Length: 416
Image (cartoon, rainbow, N blue to C red; front, side, top):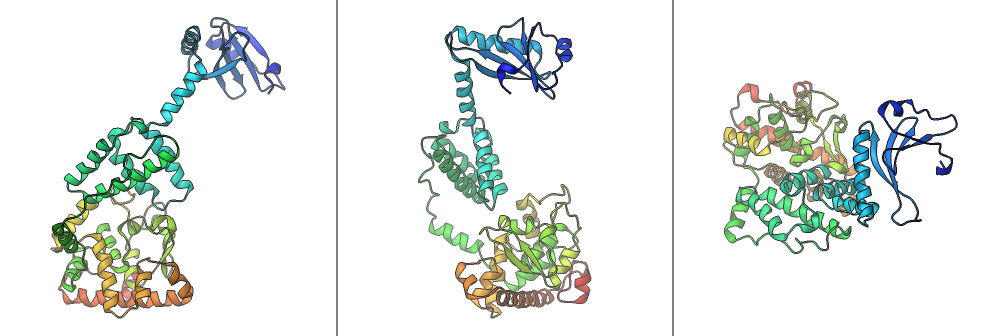
């Protein structure tokens, strides 16, 4: 509405006086000037009442306005005090609006705010693992959230990352290094900092001993180890069902942990691009063994398939969970070893390279062109059946407790 046409009042404002103000028909608001504080006014609308301070930086200059909040959340006394502070700035020759803009600019560069803006940017760009990236950043940089992003130094960021490595969490350190470096690239492009202080930062080159140790950790399980782990993964527990699903599907740890019931179909799991590392949809055949596992899970549309029995949300605390399974099974393994085990097993079973790659979600463009969808799906269903049969044979070589068995490839398993 044209300010000139806005009805104006001037009175000593009190709570009772404010409540008594009525907006005339045909008008959207009334401007009530406070007789006790020059420049202070209350905009009274039909739904909202908000304080504003009107001033001129120079005599005869254009009037400017500063919002001071809404009444009654901001009381009359608080509004007068805020207006008095702005009047003091004017008396000192300062521009209250310029000071407000500078303060807003400073707050926008605080790391906590930068992270909020960065998260919004990732979501707009449909980044596949927004929640994971932001969790890594907010937890890893928790002590720096109140700092201006331009004041962060390479030394303190590297020290933060190194502390994770020293605590025996090299994976967490690598994730924090990667995501922080990408965040700072984004902040630099936005002009929030002059340069990326982690530019060129890479982890130290691994030694021969470290490479040998990594090779020993990253491996495919033996038949005996696979059987031991299968039986240790108790299907009466969420964790046990989850690990058996990893064994049967070769899915990544987070892909299966974030699985919800909307992704479960009659003959396949359909992981959307937001849930996969490559940012592409991935379909996984559901055979009798996997169906038995899914049927044993509590069907709640508002929860993940493998929901935490404590929170009802996505499972957390992976280190502790897998430590218990390593103890129970006697097998030293990582979740990624289960992918390697399936991939190696498919090759040993005679599954062709392209199909084996597709089973793990390695959906390269050349594979998409090489096969039509029907041919690729039929081959993957057959490969899944071969792998489930192999796991059944391996599990049968051990002597498990009856209650720890989900029978594979049987009608009974389908109905379990």
